[in-house]
Length: 78
Image (cartoon, rainbow, N blue to C red; front, side):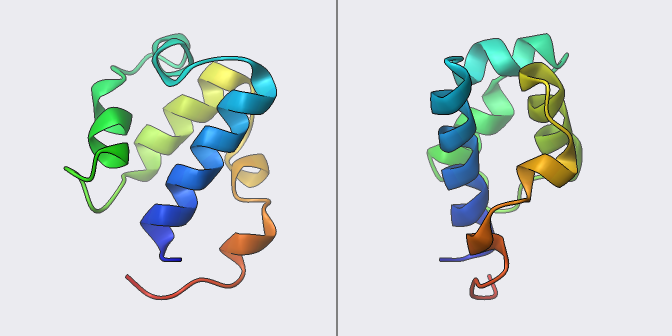
């Protein structure tokens, strides 16, 4: 798994756990959901930290909580 794949996996996990969809989470965080949809669909290969942060704000998490998954400790370079 590379960095982008790990971020996508984490976004999906958090949405499932929180019962929110990506669109709602992004909008609550003040960002258009198109950036995350482009990432998930493979149109964007390098996600911005600011996009992940906006998602986190929308679901009520910090960046530290977002990246607190064991698979971020062991992934391949992009």
